[in-house]
Amino acid sequence: MKPRDDDIILATQPKSGTTWLKALAFAITNRGRYGFGDHPLLTHHPHQLVLSIEFHGPGGDHTDLNALASPRLLSTHIPMSLLPPEMSPSSSRRVVYLCRDPKDTFVSRWHFDNKIFHGSTMELDKAYDLFCRGLSPYGPFWEHYLEYWKASLATPDKVLFLKYEEIKEDSVRVVQKLAAFLRVPFSQEEESSGVPEEVARLCSFETLTSLQVNQVSVVNDHGDHRFPANSAFFRKGQVGDWANHMSREMGENMDQITKDRLKGSGLAF
Ligand code: PAP
Image 1 (cartoon, protein in one colour):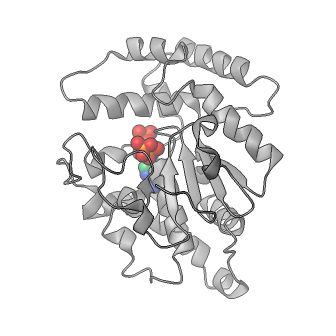
Image 2 (image 1 turned 135 degrees about the vertical axis):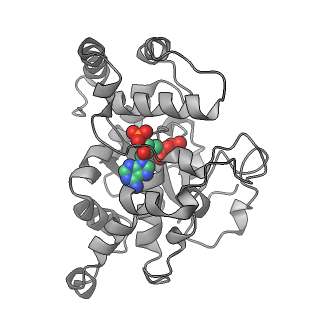
Image 3 (image 1 turned 30 degrees about the vertical axis):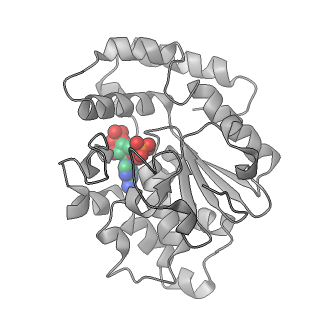
């Protein structure tokens, strides 16, 4: 893939809200193109509308990313320090990073892996131990957060740092913030006719999970049978579900690790 100056990169650790962020960014940047009554999000999974840099090609989607119209919305789980220099944030290339309380991200990941790797269920205790030791598929978990966090502090006009919990708390406010950051702010007229609210509603867990396209629970035709089914990207969509799976001590221990790893950065959960 050839990076372009006006690419918009949505970066996340897996299970921290990628699907939600894709839906929001797609709805915001394409709002002049589609009405809410026949919106592509009503018939397509967000992962089909915003393609991933690392999952296209063999083993993933076969769309040629170079054939997409500008500005492209692309997603990645790659740590910032491993992005090629031509993809780093610039005055025209924006990066939106979304993270989530590590405890909820961990629990979501555990469910997801057990769902997609049929027959190879890992005990939660074992997965917890690996996670706390920093073993995760996209490199050290907390450093992933920190790299994008530091970039957002250094260049807030190029890197927007969001938390899953803040979108849950006030999704309309985040929709407005995201639109402004992507240089497509809502007009006075859009604000007064409730467009930010419409976007938030369209992308909500309730709306997306009510759609047939997102209820597909068989393996998709993504060219490879390892690609998870659409429904696998939606589970509970809640803040704090970790408490239903981990003991209080496990939660406190993970909080302590998070505190230690993020110490002095100004980032906290
Ligand atoms: P991915 O990185 O593999 O694409 P990602 O979308 O980041 O996965 O994570 C899925 C999580 O986001 C699930 O969380 P849970 O397991 O705790 O339930 C999923 O339910 C949640 N999610 C997906 N879409 C939304 C949404 N529209 N609103 C809120 N949460 C959502």
